[in-house]
Structures are given as structure tokens and as C-alpha cells.
Image 1 (cartoon, one colour):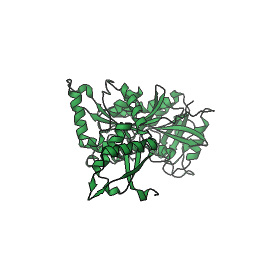
Image 2 (cartoon, helix red, strand yellow; image 1 turned 45 degrees about the vertical axis):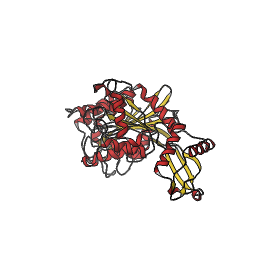
Image 3 (tube, one colour; image 1 turned 135 degrees about the horizontal axis):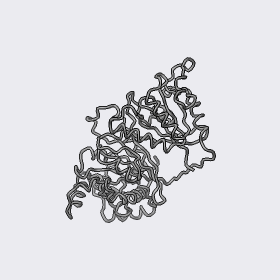
Image 4 (cartoon, one colour; image 1 turned 90 degrees about the vertical axis):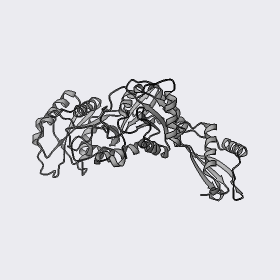
Length: 441
């Protein structure tokens, strides 16, 4: 069996994300004192009394004011979370009497047939707070908590865990590949994630910035396990006006940091922009496996040379990323999307490739013999020894007689030889140059 799932639901601005962060052990969900900030479902693992479980944070549910498409989709996301959950934590504001939305949410939860725990949040004084009004919701005795101060969270978790089924077997696959989908706003990241997952896991909208949180979704394909992370679109700093978007950019970059393979989405209609270069550059510097995914290819008028021209333009604009494979897709129609996971598997393998030291040094001697290093003021670089010291990305140390003699052009020559001999397609390579007397360090 999989781990139990606990969904945190409620109307906007009652402290759901604050409680989620408290249970997740860090600042995971965006917390801001205005309604509507958390739009999509967020998933994180947690543990209490030796029982591991997954918690889901959701956007606020509104019945009274559901006139906008985003509000309706937020409610749908919460409904999906309720369907997935084994236990539901319904968060209410203890400082406000039950609202019509609270009543409607309570009716929905009662119909679900799932165990529901009523968490009365924002309690300042546990001795004097009266919660009798909330019994009218028909969900039993409220559990008073203060998510922001962490008060009475243990009692809440005791109640949550008491509803878990017994003998849970945790399914863990150490070979799971983490995939981050990154790119500018409105390039089709959420549409691609939904196509890969085969369900409406994240909100799809043509409004730039809709996805504000990085959302993890686990899935399997042909016996292999993946976690795909849909991230908020990243804009130039000068265009980030809301505090919320500032959080989103930071979270997107952290999503890159904790991934194995990056799907860098480009808009076929716009080509490579300056912001694309910055996002791709961050992924490159982070040492992640990278696939350049050109989306919306179905909207382009094409002839037999269009793809080659676009490929050439990408290589010119992203000169530092010649190693990254390119795939032209349409997330909307599904064109070539099925090839993505094969490419992800290949790039992940390349990013983890190890080279035996003996094999490496045999080849290094050949490379140096075929193309001796140039001299500098009568002194010539000598490559004495090389070894691989890490993967993800493949990292090599070259010991030389004088590291200042290692010119950029010769460094690039050695990297090209590494790629020619061992591949490393889709993966950056790290090269560290040390003088022989630095070997002990």
C-alpha cells in the first residue's frame, strides 16, 4: 500500500498553507495574508509517531464567489485533493463565526465519506476560546490550534494518525528520476505536465503566472518511476511586482536544484529570448541533465527545413548548451510527447556516467599526443593525471604542472574529447584543474 494521504482544505485565508508548512517542516507553500495565493495542490511527505504520510495543501474553496475561471478551478483542485485523501483536515478561522462557505464545504466533506478533522486555527488563548458555534458544521469536536505558533499541532496529528489504516507498506524506489519543467510564463509547462500525467493535476490557463508553486507529482511509466515538478513561470526581476511572484521565482530555482533532469520549455512562436537564456544558464550552472523542449510546434507553418533552421538558431543563442538534445513537441496535441520520457531516461543516465580512471588516463595521453598544449613564454602545459571525482554532473580533476597554463581553448578541447569518447549528452561537464602540489588538498 502507498502512504496515507492527508488533504488540508478550507476557504481562503484561514491558514491552510501555514499549517501545511508547519507539518512539512519548512517554507514550502506560499504564505501571504490575502486570499487566493495558493492555487494548486502541493504535496509533501511528513511523519508523526513513526507513521509516514503525504500531506496536500490546496487553494481556498469558495462557493459564494465563484464567478472567475481561476476560482472555479481552485475549487476543482480542492475537490480532486479530497478524492485522493484518506483523511481530510478542514481548517476554519476560530476568530470568525462559520461563514456560508464553511457550511457548504462541510456539506461537501460529509458527502465524501472520508474521516474529517475540524481544525480551528488562529486560536490565541486556549483557555478562553469558545468553539461551540462550529459544532453546527456537523463534523464533531473542533481541535483548537495555532499553526503560526505551532501550538496544539501534536494533538491535531494524534487525531490524524488515529484514522490511518494499519500495516502501511511504504513504496520506495531509489531509482526515481526527478524532472523539473521550467521556462517563462505561458510556454505550456502545466499543459505538458498534465499530458504526461494523464490527468488534470495542475491548473492550465493562458494567464501568465497561474502556477505559482512548484508542484511535485509522482507517476510511473513502463516500470520506471518519476517525480515531475511543475514550476512557476520565471520573469525578469524588473517585472516581478508582487511578493507572491518573488516567492515563485525562488521556488522555481530550488526546484531546479532538487531535480535530476530539467525540461527547458521554449515557445516555438517566440524563439529563444533573453529570459530563456537566463533560466537555461541557471540549470546549466546547477549541473543538471537538460532537454530543450520546443513547445507549440503545431502552431508553426513549416517546410522541410523549418526544424533545422530552428535548431540552428537555438544553438547560436544557447552557445553554452551545445550538449543538450532538442525535441519539438505540442503539449496540446500530444505530438512527440511520448518521446520525452525516453529522452529523460537517456539524459539521466548520461548525467550519472562514470569513467574508470585507467581508461580515462589512457585516453588523456592520446589526446595530448594528438594535440599538444601550446607554449606560453617558453613554458608548456603538462597534463600529468586525470580522474573522475563525481557524477550529476560528471566531474573531472586534471592535475597539471601549472594551472595557469591551462588556457580556455585547451580546456574546451579536453571537454570535447570527453564528450566524443563517453557521450555525456544532455549533461554539463565539470572540469577542475589543479597543480600537482594541490593533489593532497
